[in-house]
Image (tube, rainbow, N blue to C red; front, side, top):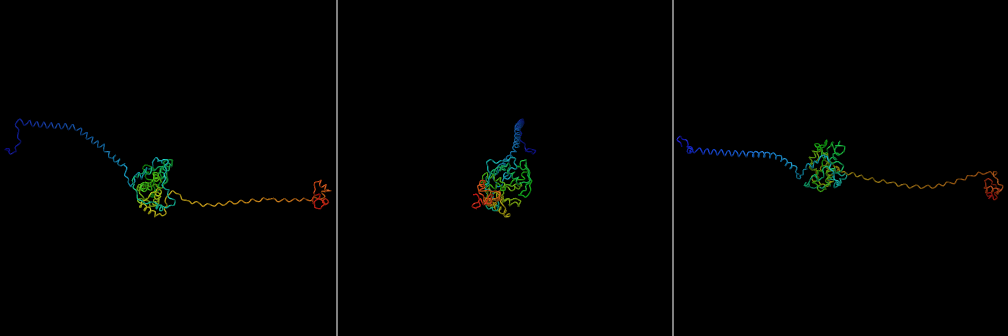
Length: 387
């Protein structure tokens, strides 16, 4: 320690030698700094460009996420008991009409119920089974949506609009594509104005009374393609109705959905029964019970059908036998004309002196009373002279 009490400093180098090491160290430090500065400057453009590319890359890849979402959103959904939009909302008012291929005949497996059959009696004939899996269901298995199945030049949707709407106008002079009209909707009990257009057509949709998906799970898998196409286009199974109400129904059966308009439920359930009987479909136990419960409030509800009432043939009217011809009248033989009496000629008028004279005159024989007769010429008195 120094005498003044301060701690001793570092040892001092000998004079003349300490300055050079300090200068050398400083020079080295400056050199290293310069080298680092130059290296840093050289690498700066690369770092900047790399940062810009990273930003650009992030910006260029930012829109990729939506495209992946879009791809995911367009992927085919897994089978579900809830129908997709394709199932419940087939293309509305298409401009082109899909034509049924030539030679294809669409017929239901059975004829519709006989006229006069009640819905309750027909319900008894439907098999009761469980719901089959929906596996494999697709709208295309029921044919082209709204095809012209009856080959009348109009698609099925327009055929039903023409049937169910009032005050109809058409898009052109051909009475086919419905432009506007008024629907008295049986499902809701309201009146709906229809106007054809991309933003308005969906207000009136065509409901499958027995939904396609419901049919698939209750027997339609066993039908042919032609029979399923007939099912999807059968007027018995189609009803124009309020679009939002149709969407709420989806693929519900009578056990899960009924029209809000209670006054139409009897007819609605009766139509479902007729459709299922015609296409050999079954009902679940819950569905059967719901239908039976509805029909108890409308005893005698007829099952809708296209069959006509059987009119008994009238009893044959007996044809009276033709009268026998009247016998021909016997020929009338005219009575012989009465001989015209010859007026006696007075004897004096004709006189034959003898029979020779009478004969010469051609008067012989002369009967009594004739001219020229006289007893003298009648020798035998027999009334004949000049015999």
